[in-house]
Length: 170
Image 1 (cartoon, one colour):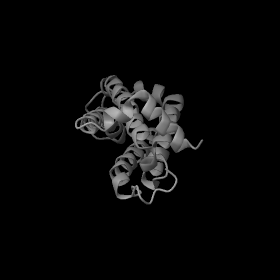
Image 2 (spheres, rainbow, N blue to C red; image 1 turned 30 degrees about the vertical axis):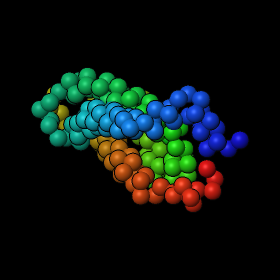
Image 3 (cartoon, helix red, strand yellow; image 1 turned 90 degrees about the vertical axis):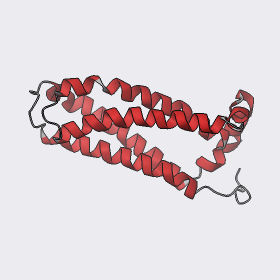
Image 4 (cartoon, rainbow, N blue to C red; image 1 turned 30 degrees about the horizontal axis):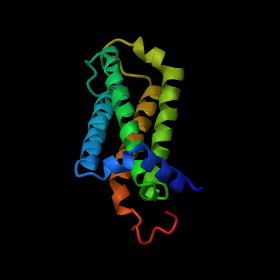
């Protein structure tokens, strides 16, 4: 059984397919996905911009306290994103825009791990108006770049969607 067939079977058995194909299923889940994206990028994006030197009067510790909203947004996006995937796996699994989006998310996760393992403790100890060291600024730039690619990849999914009549692997 292929990945697409497995996801389709899961979608039918769980009821996700039925819900997503109601009048309000897709719009509700997409709205929740954008709320999660707003939470994620609103907090992580602001924190990254602070690390890059914008808003130097703002305490890094205060900005870092908001990152948990970004974590909640990411969790919401994982849940809603999985609902999209299992409701129509053929649209996503073989879609190059989706694949680029997933790669950017993986790179953002690796970047996050590097930040917390190598530089976060030093950054937290800086005075409020201090310029952040170059390695932390580089990681912030990589983070912002990855999340911009995630957004662009998400928007491009519909442009690279294989037509259902052409989707011979579905």
